[in-house]
Image 1 (cartoon, rainbow, N blue to C red):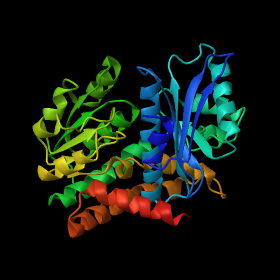
Image 2: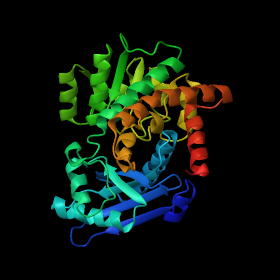
Image 3: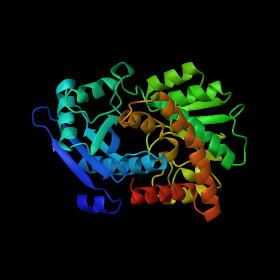
Image 4: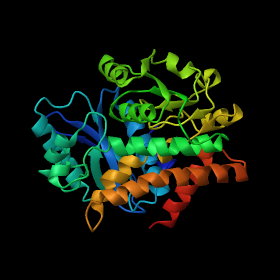
Length: 347
């Protein structure tokens, strides 16, 4: 499929491929929508099988960012950047090259953290462009977004429990968390503190060790999808809910932080047909975006405003679950409809 055909169906505004000869940086930036404000989205640094895989990832991620921002009621749109690993050996030179890429878009894209990026990298971007958020607290920014993403996931889990006809409390529940990175670990810690027992997994040893130290029981990363639990929380890679995995799920609720958890739109219907309550990923995981995008507020960053908006994820999902039931839709379809309506209406 051509780049133009790939852009047309989801409605992307702009896709740019960049190559920096001096550093070897290879990046793709996709701007999905600026109807509600500048496209905000993280920079993902990872190894891809080929350029086609990188393009598919950035297109899907940027589209999800638009829906995430719209459902959260934010005055920003969706965009994303992917950098094909390996990143240039000279980190500073590579980040400066990436920053020139961001700057060339004139504010249509505002970069922030994602896989392979940290606060120090945002600081390097800011040496060249002001169109990057997620600065450290000491630099006057919003700091690490992971805790806010985790807080939003916990709030969303309460809504999902309610939608499943259960009490919105975690004491005595068994929860499976796939992916124990910064967000997954924060979710694990919050669940344990609330009285849940947690089984966790990751593809790497170090996150598993941290999760175990926190009090989680470690299981195989693929087998965790079949664990008999009250809630399954995908917090790692996307596409884990698909035609092969959904039939073997042993949970009444799926609610986690990973982006693009459904491999296809049809998988939302497959979950509903099994009676599994699914919290749409781009709604429940919006806490990090809420946090970093607050740096764009004309009055400056406000942690109180961020906490209020992150807590609102619970009420947003309450509404989505209620509308889905009333219209005979899946929660994923309802959330997507609401997001598209808001994007079409603009600011």
